[in-house]
Length: 333
Ligand code: ACO
Image (cartoon, rainbow, N blue to C red; front, top):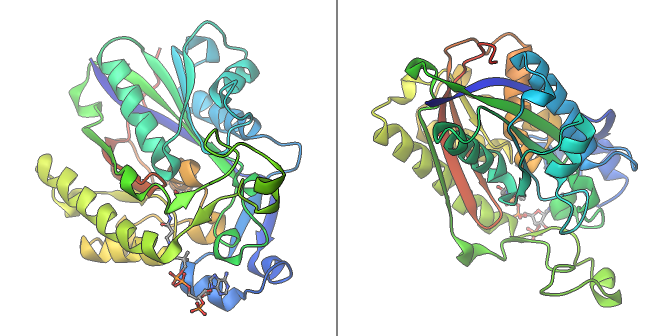
């Protein structure tokens, strides 16, 4: 049995936040943000709109495009660093409830911006081992809830949104996900961190005063490791599978920063038309960024059956991952 990537969907909240809006909140400028990151806008969820609300909307699109009902799902895996609830219940359980599904496994994955590729690795394993036939994977983030809007070094980068995909069983080897590679190095744990409100430093007046429940990032140091790791990761997965970079139809990296993506694409000698970039529009939406970018490609009519996608992500932990995925939109049963 093989695992096939059947469909993609996404959800973008309606409120847009421009660089000019941020100029009114912190000492920054459209020029600085554009030059250093390529970001022009990001979308922000409503106060009463949760991560699972966004995840479920993306999931409905992916289900519809795969031609399956929620009742046909065997498993739901949600990657997020901004869950509805701290510890429990999982955002995946909330999504299952909102889809009207029960009595199947549903759980979250915490792998920061690499979360969608980690979820893909899980789904592939469960399908290939014949434990599941249809797995819904989601990357959903309400990062605006964990961003410190007094810290200009992080608040300009992040946005909200969700993306989802259906991974289905197939006996057709040509449709099979070719490879998924995931890894981590916890030695860099404090480069991207929410230092307060976990069990290491429980929520208190002090953590609130220090804004310790918000994301902190050593941006410049992270940048350097990100470029190197994202590049090495792709070189390795292509080599291991005897695939040339020229054979890739769409390189869909995690959308953290235009400069990072461009540096990786240049190192890999990828052509502009192979590189998918949406960071300018959505900012960094962590685990949601890859399926959101893929969804835009699909809706623009540029993602066709049989196209070979190369996914590549890097994020807090540090975690990273890459995947070689043919798009196989045949409807599953
Ligand atoms: N507006 C104006 N000036 C700013 C801003 C801002 N928003 N933010 C920082 N600056 C200033 C700094 O204070 C610094 O000033 P100084 O020289 O007077 O000290 C100067 O700009 C340069 O700061 P750097 O941090 O060196 O800027 P850099 O070019 O590295 O860009 C950025 C910062 C955009 C954060 C970049 O480092 C980056 O993209 N890092 C990687 C992000 C990433 O890949 N994250 C991983 C995934 S995210 C996840 O897992 C959740």
